Length: 228
Image (tube, rainbow, N blue to C red):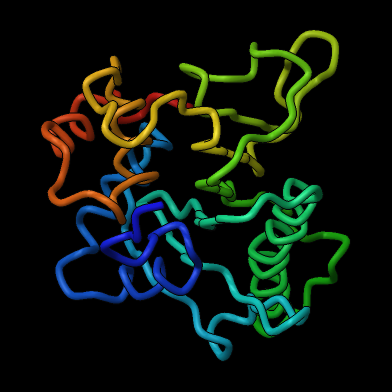
């Protein structure tokens, strides 16, 4: 087996180093806006233990990346290299933190200014999006959930007719394990999404950036305002 030339971006620590490197923020923002179309990222930051009160106590784990859109929507971005049976439940748990933080801040502000009790609170929430880029594939009941065989999207909907119960919570998974292309088979990638997945999966072993990578990010972006 050939030894990789570079550190794998799908490892948590590598991703955090890349996020913190000068000049990488615009590319990361474009990547996020590509996978969650119609959103415009206002701020992007790596979270440390002391920041925001959004730290998971178990094993001192923090989110890989936390973003906010121009509309106030919040995004958790996670890279996951090794398969984990309960990964979706873990992401659901993570999502409760920014949701709770929104309401806790509102409660403190209202009680400080006016003394209004919690039963009269405005419980509207800024939507939270959890974006995961996985080096494996998730189990699905069928392929209907998948976009081009690589991206699955979930929200809280009516089981019968698909009506959205709330827009407050969304999950997006880029499943690189479903990419049916090996290293060196870049020419077999037929869509911008496949080429993006190929780049993320194999960039640590490549000598140079695959042709069309930046163009693919631009082509994949849909008109602003269109919900995913």
